[in-house]
Image (cartoon, rainbow, N blue to C red):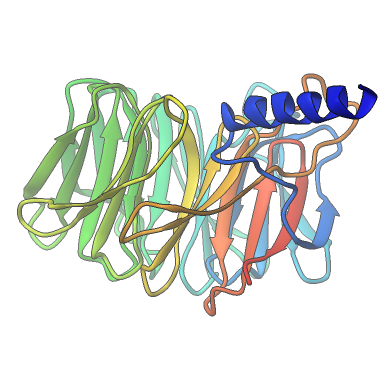
Length: 329
């Protein structure tokens, strides 16, 4: 009877996990773990080559890390109190530049020495993406606009409009497209050669996250506790796949396509990492990240992810201040 009760309990626990993470998840195959921010991180950015990490602490300052050495290179802070703080950040493809945003300002830094090389006051910011060269930033705002901004010349190039606040932005590494998501339920693709609108997709609720593949061929859109769909960036935005979520939906806050666009990693707002087959939308792996015992409730938002170029490893950073390297083999 005791063994039977234990079996029933295990099944109940598995069902509970299914409601939060696709499949009966485990803790994944961890290769390394680092504690970066003991009090937790408010924002995070991993460089495309996985060499550097920016952690924006809850206390308002940011720190740039050498990931391999697990050392802080320097700290970044524009204000002397915790009223500021970085809400989003992005590295250029060559890790030469780092762009950070606070609610009322955007800044551009040299990664090598932490030197400030650009500062612009800008009201009501929400998200930022940076071009591969580090020259351009795509800035999402609460004013229903995403601005494609030339940081070298200090001028706006294009203005992409929505009917509600911008929630998420992305740029393709090849420089062809910008992708924007907003509270108007739409994800929109824009041509960066002329600033023209390519297509929009109604995701039936406010957009949580959008992500473009490095080659500019694929676009991910996710709605809060809702659907996640992958579209082609062709003229009509053909549906490639819909992620096969077993429960009623999920909220994605971070994502990364593999270099070849065949797999996708997503980080959930509530404690889950998922690996997907892009063509079919089927789940390949799902697991739960590490959390600190003192954290209550027992949760971790996956703030950023990066798949290695050979698809063998995944680097993740959570809101608990913990970074982890996972095996994808």
